[in-house]
Length: 384
Image 1 (cartoon, rainbow, N blue to C red):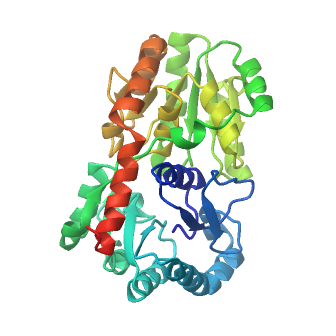
Image 2 (image 1 turned 180 degrees about the horizontal axis):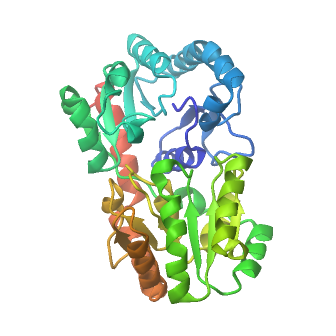
């Protein structure tokens, strides 16, 4: 269950892993425009709107319409789960409608279905609330959960600092890489060809992000003159499906002011898995200069194709990057250190690529993800 579909590609990966482990998978979520679910995964529409969650705050009419239908959609989803004979369900949500999600969790429990929550972060506004003053608003959502899963130790520690009484229900599931879906996808040939021509053999830095404030785009832009002084020739690929046209133009204006607009490929609209594969195959490395983070889908995407990464030493990113193996870490808010790390990886790309493949296949196997999720669902339903 992911009512507002916070990340369709992540949902696809998790569903594909459970499918490959022999489970029958039915995802209840909004189907995004242009999105195609993985083969062998049933995708049941949760709501009629196709707007992604990030747009709701900017569109009062769409948000109001969704909120009005939300309880009915939850009731319909719960009835389907009951009819299937399910005793537990995996739930992940952005908590943009926390009171309604808390109500739905209680309805699940009363309907004989034990909720297992997969928590990407404690709540949507967590990074702008470092003292946890808003944490109380979301407690009612977590209290009915039979199990709460985290994809790294950092997210679990932050969560328990706010909700210590829930510790006995907590467990961990490794963050999946995107190999289970990207491995069977061919890169969009037209886009891949255009990207090759644009790159012209120069190293390509890819920044794949929602570009929220905590994701550090200003630090990356500030590092570009330092990178340019050492590399001479390079390209920057910026892909963010959640930016408005106005926001995208501001980023492009900043690149122009730096004198680098001609070296940059910008994409501000949603992209498909074949397009994501083309981005990743073009990238020499993926950069995640976050100022704060719990985890990063961009790093999981890079891992799927064996692309090295440069990330900052924050949150769960520290657990995802092995310096000298699949990439390098730099302090947050430090453009000079970020540039140094990028130059180091570009200077020894083949070694880092080999390390990224080892990290994917040995240190973060998909089988462990499926086993952890299935075990949590069995524990919640009383089968273990």
